[in-house]
Image (cartoon, rainbow, N blue to C red; front, side, top):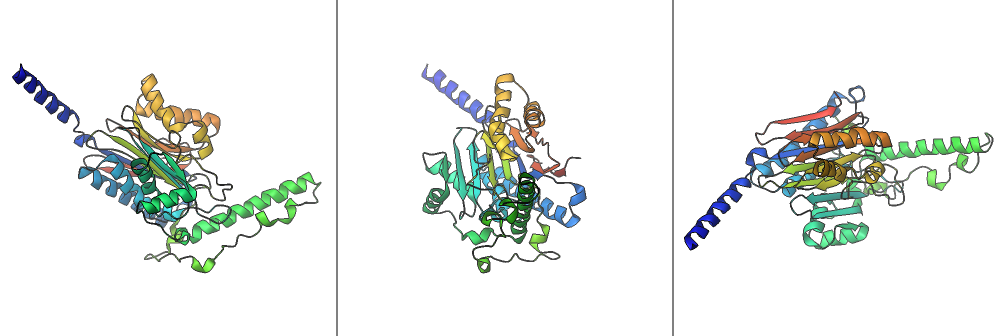
Length: 377
């Protein structure tokens, strides 16, 4: 009897070990934001720069998966590349708030345990995705914000930088344009309301006056590339859509999703978008899929986009592709939400639907074959 039990135990262990080998299905998918991205307004130099950035992110994440790393580790590695690049609205390339600050958000979720971590409104953490992972793995909480999140990150040994690290001239100019447009709209409305004579809004009060950085001399100048400054290569996708994200399936069959963002240009009042909200911009569940979103955050929050895709798979039995299309191409469109998502399921199937003009995106499979896409066609 003991011998039979031992045999059964060994057999079950072998079957379990075999069942957990997903080496031939490992997959990593990334996005670098969505928005008004068309061939007509994208120069060859810019397109080349973005493709190279996306390619590097794919390769770094893939290296982790091929060496037996976890999906969370792969997501972190891929997002680090995009957070460290001024090209993307996350980390180094974050956009400016109305106050002239860079406020960053990020989230991570693990499909096996449904554990998650997030940080919001941080201004001094070099890689917010790593802070989100620290919240998930080294605290009893899911989300931390502002100075508290920064204190926690510092205590955990993460790299803290001076806020000037996040300054880029191109993003600063985008803020100036947004403020100028806002002032024009306010002037126009005030004149209409006052019979064409203007009013308080027409004079451009302090809140809508010229933006002056608190300490311009402390900002670092961007390095030069062989043919352009980095700022010349930064493409403005539109004030609502800048985000980066990654989803992955590792050799153990576990899914993970991560998202990182600099938020919305000219945002006020400590506004937080969907990226750090579990179930809205980030979600992972081994039973269904892993999702990272990019778009107009308010709509993604109200529609609980990432979890809705998972729920359609779990409760209605939809495929990843059908569930993603149902949410992004139908529900969001009907509600006026613009943007897209990337997703992967436990079989390595990939979905990358978006309803905006374009979305930086790409994926790499177990055989090392990858594809990078930007436009609709």
